[in-house]
Every structure is written in structure tokens, then in C-alpha cells.
Length: 157
Image 1 (cartoon, rainbow, N blue to C red):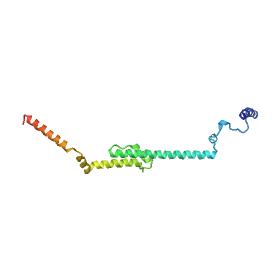
Image 2: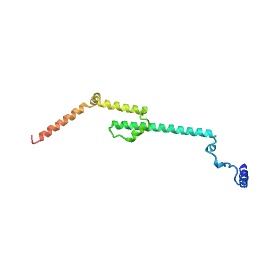
Image 3: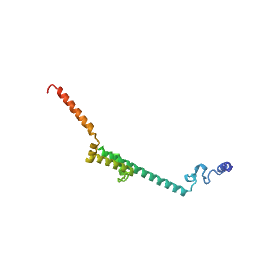
Image 4: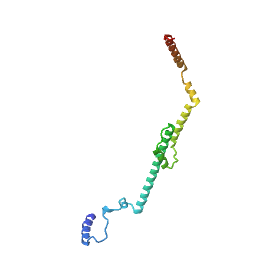
């Protein structure tokens, strides 16, 4: 009801004075702080918090990208693949000193241990122990018998 009275009387009063008086803000012309029901100081504090949170998220995202780039670089070195400039730049953006997450570092360490085990003499001996000597002996004898038979059939000898 008050709105109807204000709109009817306010419009006529404005016409009467010629609109020279101080302008009142209408309901549609509220500041962003008033629109959210906050004072100006509260709104500025809210905006600062939003900006800080965004900067923190961006820093975490950059850190994660650098960790992934470090992991890719590690695998490129391991398998002797060509280096990638974007990975190097991502690592530099994060400050250059990037540590891998614990889980990834543990996986890489286990991978390296397995590689070292396979390359060592002990690793070679364990693979020899896993061989079935009886089947290997049978295969060798069968091959020798085949060679003897083919040599007997050979007309040159």
C-alpha cells in the first residue's frame, strides 16, 4: 500500500518540482552491498575474502600442475623421451622446487627398486631359478635329435 502511495504521490511531486530536488535512489538502483543486505564495510571485507580465496585456489592449482609436470619429466627421463617445454615452464611458475605427493613418490621409489632388482646379478639368478630345467633339457635333446636326423638325410655329408 505504501508503495502505491509513494509511486502515485512521488511521481506527481517530482513533476511539480521539475525534478530539481535531490535524486532518490529507486528500488532498482541499490548498490551491490545494499542488494546483499550488508553495509559497505561488510561488503568490502567480503570482496577481500573472495579475492584471497581465489588467489589461494590459484596457487594450489599451480602447485598441482607443477607436481604433475615433475612426474611427467621423471618418466621422460626414465624412458629417454624428449623433454617438453611446457612442463619446464609449469615447474618454473611454481617456484622451481616442486616436491611430489607422498603417494607418487612412493610409487616411483618402488618402480626404481624393481628396476634395480631386475638389473642386478641377484635378479638374474632368481630368474634362472624360476626356469624349469627338465623342460629345457628335453627341448635341447629334441633339437639335437632333429639335427642328427637332418644330417643323416643330407646328401652332401
